[in-house]
Each structure stands twice: as C-alpha cells, then as structure tokens.
View (cartoon, helix red, strand yellow):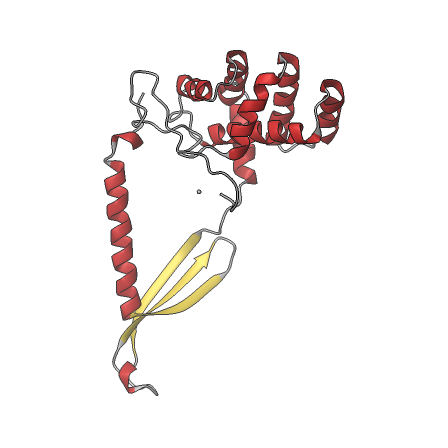
Length: 228
C-alpha cells in the first residue's frame, strides 16, 4: 500500500521482455505509478549525463542514510536547478531505487528492471546507471540500510490461551457461556491479556480461513509466479 484533489495515475502494466502480454506482468513499481517517479521520469530527460550522475550519487548516499544537504546545494548551484526541480528528481530517484531494492534479486531480474524504465521513457544511458546501482556491488549494503530504517511493528514471541466458563455472573445470559482468554508476549517486552467471546472467536476463525483461501487463490495466478 491519492490525495484528494490530485490526479490519479492510471494502472501501469508493462509488456514483458519475452513476449508476455501487458496484462501478464505488473511493473516492479506497482500497479499505480508513484507521482514522484512519474514526475522524475519526465524531468530527467532534460538533464545532462554529468548532472544526472551527480544526482544519482546523492540519491545513493541518501539511501545509505547519509546527510546530503551540502551535496544537493552544490549541484543546485552548478546545474542551475531550482529547489522544486531538485526535490522532484531526487525524490523520484529515491522511490524508484528503494522499490527495486525492496524486492529480492531473485524475483526482479535486471532485464525486467530495464524494460520497466524504458516504459517510463527514461534515457537509455540513465537506465544503465540505475541498473548499476540496483544490481551492483553495493546492493547488499543498500538493502541492509533500507531494512534497518524500515518501521517495524513488534512481533509475537509467545502466545497462550485457555477456555474459561463463567458459572455465575451478574448477567444471566452469560452464565455457563465459554470464552477464550488469550495472552500475547511481544518482542518489545510488553504483554497483552484479553478475553474473546465465543461469537467473536468464531468470527475470527472464519475470517482467517477466508484470508487463507484468498491467498491460496492468488498463488495459483500465473502473474504472481516467479519466472526465471
């Protein structure tokens, strides 16, 4: 996983590199192209090769978590680019590379990556430079940095439950009705204990089964199968 009042990009399917139809594969950038990538792809065509490479170097430094403000300032002065133009170019490059690095190298092939950038009408020589970053020697470092910077929710480390039956309560309707007591211990050290009524547990069980069925149906679709 568009702001109200802004134009929404159309679905962004691509033809495959080996004769696949445009409906059989979706770009690694997603079904809907991010606005910053779309704006970058249009602006980057006006850049010289030297300026592009300077911006790409700054983008890689940003992906590594470095402070790039001075470098950006120097590029703006030497290339006569406005703050708005720089923001468009760098944010678009950052998003494009981050999406490529987010996917395992086994599922995103270099030729597919290049084909998707061609669909954006990015100049060929720039595509080669993008691919060098996304599939070059620094990829493991960039992947590790992106993973460490990602916001992660606490994981469930321990889960306990038991069935409880109230023999006598202030509510006659709840007497002798079973309920499930659950306790979760999370990776951040916190523990949560709560009671789940039988009706809610049945609802949970049904929805989990429904999700598993949907996942199974999705896995059967050829578009989601990893192809060499």
